[in-house]
Length: 239
Image (tube, rainbow, N blue to C red; front, side, top):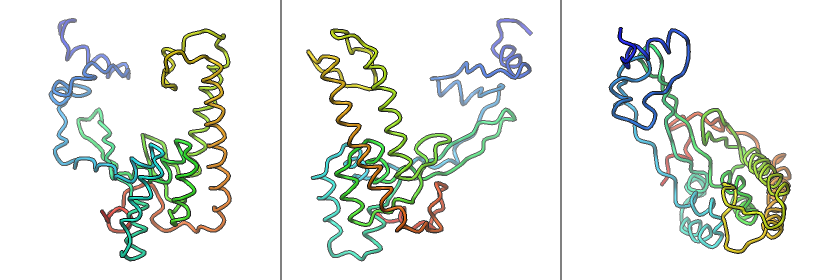
């Protein structure tokens, strides 16, 4: 075939077992050709659920909003309250096979407690634990990541420490522009930003300390896995 043929190039990439993503960012071309010249039918894949309002408030560290949402459970049963507090969205991972077929995996995303721990919001973590949020429930926020709340807190701390190392290597007066881990503030110095990061680190350590303290008192439930189980995981069924 012609060396200018896309299909020829794709065939060569398969033969050499190389992953050339010619259609990245072009969903129409991806559906028409896919990897290896196949079109993929993903019409059977349900749309991902949206994150709950409590999840967003927990991620932002908005303790006031978190409390307001939890108060809405007044008058509801304990089971309904637990379901709301521990609710995690369902999302589908689609694995595109070279054979032209797809394999689908359904996962739970992070719980409100886990995302608060990941962001180092210790006050939100403490409050949700007091409301009996389950720290043993695992989520899969991205491919090949399966963590409970304690794991998320440690993951967030590791990310922060790597960011802090980069700041430490900057000289005073250097620009913070381009450091994706930080919000660029006008006239903020490297030292000022480093101090803020260190303060945030103490919040992560507080999250880890609390989650390790309560761990012995929580027994894993049968549905603690990150795999989406539908009705066997009641926490995802209550809105």
